[in-house]
Amino acid sequence: MELKSLGKITDYKYDYAPEFLEAIENRNSGRNYFVTLTSEEFTCLCPITHQPDYATIKIRYVPDKKLVESKSLKLYLTSFRNHGTFHEDVINTIADDLIKLLEPRYLEVEGLFKARGGISIVPFVNYGRGEFEDIAKKILVDRHA
Image (cartoon, rainbow, N blue to C red; front, side, top):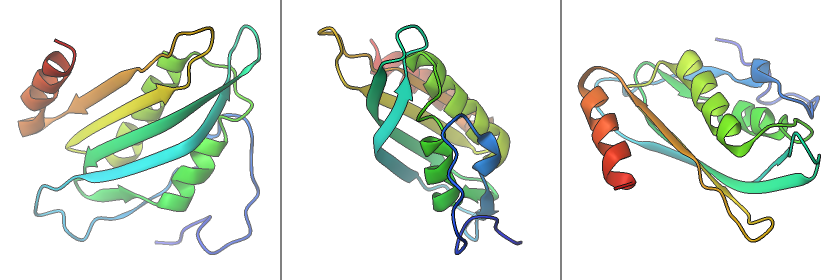
């Protein structure tokens, strides 16, 4: 498998670019385990005011056959820099793109957005398939009960 970004000179893009995402083989696909990825410097733009929104993005997943390559994830998240989108849409877009790429057993994405106007928004989305489908539903309900 040849990676496009890792070990190469980076051509950064600053508008939503899902083509940056790449997967690598999970050599431990025979067991369930969590991978947690945290980006503390996420930025996107409000689609109405065009003011910057800052967040910590937390991604947790139980991989199946693929893992996300971390540099490709960094480039992907950076691509939101000048992209106008609502907080809830960002989190769902990231989840959709990672589900499409990885086909994980379980995935959750959370955005801890900095307060603007005295209100912080913390959207959370999760997904599960197979034995994790009911777990995903329970986590979503328990988390926000």
